[in-house]
Image 1: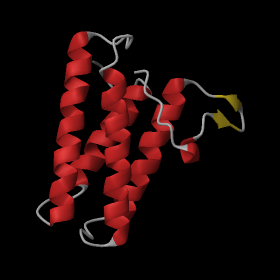
Image 2: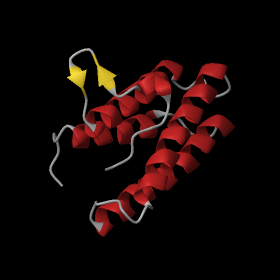
Image 3: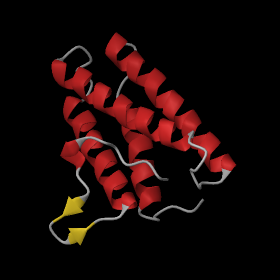
Image 4: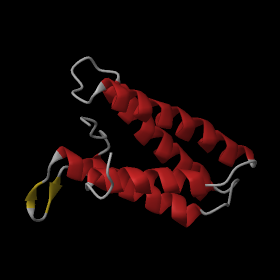
Length: 122
């Protein structure tokens, strides 16, 4: 993936030196996933709404990057990730509406983090 979220709080530089794009993507997913876990299923609370908003921003940034002609991922992988982005956005709305829970979003984000670290096979 080429997506690196533009939010300053995610940064690109760590204390150990310059980080790769994958490191930045991993950190973005990690931070958003922590917010989702902290919000739990408090669907109507400001923490849950903020966590869903951050998750939506992350997935929209990723989807926009995947749609760029210069994105080097294979077309099948791009399509799958764009589909996941669509699911994450729709499911986030169900959480805010009170009909869904955050667990599927956490599971998807954790799977993405594992993929970025090469912990799962394609």
